[in-house]
Structure formats: C-alpha cells, structure tokens
Length: 144
Image (tube, rainbow, N blue to C red; front, side):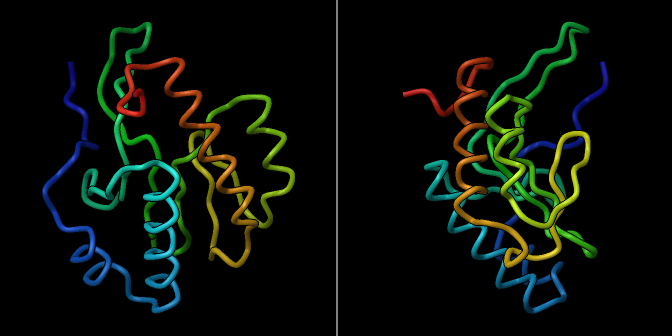
C-alpha cells in the first residue's frame, strides 16, 4: 500500500511561514489562524507535509483498507488562497457554510483569499463541529 505523503514533520511552523509566505497580509492571517486553531483545538501547530499547518491528529481507516493519520484542523497558506482543512460533511457544517462569507468549496477543503472575507465566529463553529465529528467517528487525539 502507498505511503501517505502528508505526515507530521519536524519543520518549524514559523520558519515555514517566514520562508514560504511572501505576502505580508497572508503572513498576518497565517499567524491569526494559528492562534485561533490552537485555541479551538487545544493543540500546538505542527507541519504536515511540506505546506500544511495542522493541529492535533486523528487516525482514519477507509473501507478500502487505506488508513493513516491527519490533523484535526489545518490550513495551508497557498499563493492564491488559503486552503482550510476544517470541514466535516454534516448537516450542521453545511448550514454554517451559508453564513461563512466569501469562499469556494473543494472536495475536502474550503478556500478563502483572506480572513477578512469570512466570519470568524462561523469558522470557529465549523472547526468545533469538525472536531466533534472526528471524535465520534475516528481514533482521535481530541478524546479526553
């Protein structure tokens, strides 16, 4: 079975942001997202793969047998926009999207250009809903 590309690394999150992010507003937004996701998840930021900043971890296993670990919450400050890895496909999450603000939806993530385009309180609720979903459905570091 293929090895997962996105695994936790020892790279410094601050070093990554300072060397990878070339837009000052995106740096400010990245540090704000770190503070928010740290608070909401209760976990310190860690690099996952070369460009994802993740918080906590959970273990998933698909019916196909593929399994691995992933961060509970995460984001990547890509050149064009932020990729937010915070979405669980629940009724509550889908309702929350209506009030999130300006974003695009991918298969497994939410894309935003800047934090000022979205409602931070709704972002918090989406993140907490995702943590609750992962806690219920997977082996999760969020369990007490």
